[in-house]
Each structure stands twice: as structure tokens, then as C-alpha cells.
Length: 292
Ligand SMILES: C[S@@+](CC[C@H](N)C(=O)[O-])C[C@H]1O[C@@H](n2cnc3c(N)ncnc32)[C@H](O)[C@@H]1O
Image (cartoon, rainbow, N blue to C red; front, side, top):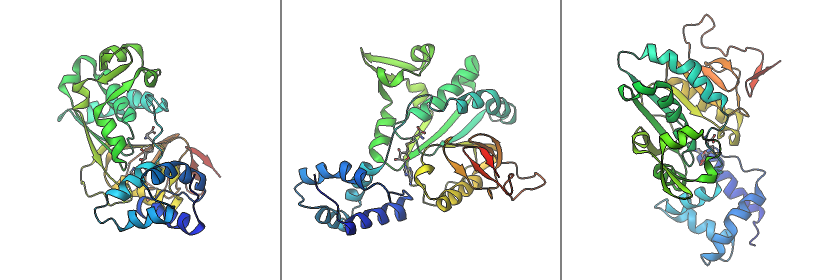
């Protein structure tokens, strides 16, 4: 296996942190493990040779391949089910009334990986509305940095072992069986989702206001300052009364303008008496638990 020199490790860590917010300071072994074979197979003699080549490529294709290798894409259907229970119990009943005139829901899944999370969201919504589902227009924007996972998400094809947490009746309702071990999400739900590449370090130029933004299990790779700034960018495109989901292991800074609702759930309520400040002044929310 090829070994990284201190200098090349530093170059990669700096590039990933500066461009994508991903902190790989302690991930030397991971970087070597994920890149070494590909670099040798392509005929490069060292990390330096490959990094020089990738950084010099003006098309950006090489760095994109590099980034696709270095992102961690682990995900599964129904992950952190408390979010989907809360969506069904509180968020959908609220927006069913609030958006009754337009019968439209605007949602953003901001680190969608191979698609299990955005599909779980649209399935939860469809299941909630039941016979009325066709009367509602669900627009879910699903974004990720990694173009390989976006392609998989868009295809919506999963093997049976990836679906052990999907309720039986959902398997029948929301998937088409392709063969003995492979299933595909039905077109009606796939058509509710727009998959798009987006780097969470960039400004959000889309001025749409979302009823729900779900950004789970990606901020864990970011430094606190990066995380805080991202959460405030989300706030600016959250509808009044709308929600933010984070991963349960992720902490949101105490100065957020969002109001804490329950672990890993936040809400935009800007006309509250202490608007403009985190609700938990003097404390930090870590995984939703207030710590003094
Ligand atoms: C561990 S997965 C989480 C997937 C899903 N949200 C979940 O909770 O199961 C993290 C995803 O974040 C993406 N990611 C990492 N940095 C990103 C960035 N700067 N902008 C957008 N997506 C990013 C990765 O490509 C990866 O697919």
C-alpha cells in the first residue's frame, strides 16, 4: 500500500477542510486505505504524483473523483426513526393545516447520500396522507456533494438486505420488485424528489423557504464554526414555523436563532420574545441535550 508523506497528508486535509468543510485531521489511515489502490491502479507512483495531477486538472473531474472516494456515505432506511415519528405526529399535522391553501410541501434533504433518507421522508409523508396523498404536491430537494451516491439515489434501486428496517407494507406499497433480491422505489415517489449536487459550504442561492430541512450525520465531519454558520444559512431558508433535523450525535451552537424542540429537532419561530438568540442561553445543545 502507498504511504502518505506528512506534506501530502497536509495538502489533502487542507483541501478537504477548506473546500468541503470535511475534517480529516485524524483520518490518515482512512485516506491511505481509500485512495492507495486507485492511485496505484492508475499508474501513479506516489500520492504526490497523483495529488499534483488531480489539483492541476482544470476540469475539476479529478478532484471530484478524489472527493467521492473520501466522503463517508453510510446510511440506511428509517435511520434515527424518532425523526420520522415526529414528522408524522407533529410536523405533518401542522403543515396540513398551515399549507391547506396550496397543498404543497417543500422539503430539503441536505446530505442525501444513496437516497435512503429522502425516500424514507417521502414514504412517511405518503403514508400520513393516505387516500389524500394525490391531492398534495410534495417537492423534496435531495442534495449531496458526492456525484456517485447521487446517481445511486436517483436510480432508487436497493437490495433486499438494505431494506430490513422498511415496514413490510411499505415494501409492497412503495417498491417494485425487479428480481429475487432487488427492489426499486416506485416512480410516483421518485418523481417527488429532485436530486442535485450541492456543497454545503456554498451560499444557498435558492431563495425557496422550506417547511423542513433535514441535514443529518454530515455536520459531524465539520468543525463547530462551520457547523454553526451552516445552521444559520439553513435558518434563512426555513419557513416561519418550519423545522430543522440534525443527526442525534450532532451539536448545534447555543447562539442559533432556531428554537430547540426535542433532541435533534429545531424550529424557526422568529417572533418569540428572545428571538435572535439561542433558546438555551448559557448552555450547549449536544445531541439535543442541554448541558450547563
Ligand atoms: C454519513 S452520510 C449521511 C447520509 C444521511 N443524511 C443519513 O443520515 O443517513 C454523509 C453524506 O454527506 C455528504 N457530504 C459530506 N460533505 C458534504 C458537503 N460539504 N456538502 C454536501 N454533502 C456533503 C457525503 O457525501 C455523504 O453522502
